[in-house]
Image (cartoon, rainbow, N blue to C red):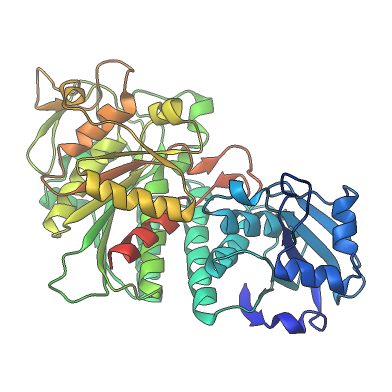
Length: 487
């Protein structure tokens, strides 16, 4: 999608397939206040916009989209009005979601040029939202359902913000495409190859560990999960240097289980269907790395992803097995479907060796987190309240909901084993998201660390107004924002 700018005074002259305008809901006394651009369009159309709103033909409810065809006074085939709801109810991320809702509505057919005349900021969120909203999960359909625009034009666009929005939108969509792709296309080796390609494209170094290197590095926990699959495991280390070498890097760690059958603790078919998305944490890390490098963020970042398939065969790891992780701790396996934490255990240890002084891991780790928080909210857990506050602040800036779960010491007792140092699940089903985080805490040393369980928001069973169903690309923008805030 080509992104460009035009001046507000040129609005009557610029030809387009569609123009998008935003309107706020009426205030409590029933008065309608149009923003500057909406008011300009209302005047150019001889009061049409206001009349349609007053007549109830156009909805001003949040993210409602209404089409007006062949509007007089504009060189556009149609006008799309996106409602913003009441100003006092507006939350961060509205620009991203409103742009996404508008773009998704207009992407129902191929359009050459779309103009955004939205009374909303920031502009980078408008661009990113439009890019995300216009791209669907229909990667393999002969007849597509969504068509990204050839050209998107923003009224009075700031070139720097437009560029930033384009980079962010591209990064989120990269993550979405990876998560939406099937496991016969995205598997450990092919994912690692994509990391190499993106590093060459965006400007960060990539190191790939194959099975032989993983064995040399004593990554026993990751290798145990991988041993049931014909697909070879990989661990990828991505290094971006945007600051002097004496600035310690932030470590981003992603779970990359490219398909999860559950192993010998086999999932039922309905639970296995979407398990191509169990590498969303790794895809989020890769998306964030591409954006940070292209934006030339003044920070040092190391991104690490552990890539495996969790399959069934005669060589699968078993319940009751005792595995030694890279840091020397022994793990008793009580459930082979609790595999993501086994993979992350070794990857987190490698991140410590890469001198990451702050850690963030992202993983579709537990169904328990969805039971606790639903499908649209991520769970956040930490060993450092200050570092968590930084991540939560960035998430709020981006409008990506996260809720902190407690990490009381007593939860750690639930993963103690009588056979080994720890076991890979807690006592029963209670507090499963937290006991999984307590397991990961065993591998982060004393470094400030935030664990983000994105099992719910990373994949939409039903499409929200601003993006297609399937992969959401959540938390790419939050991670970029958090590191920019540090810099």
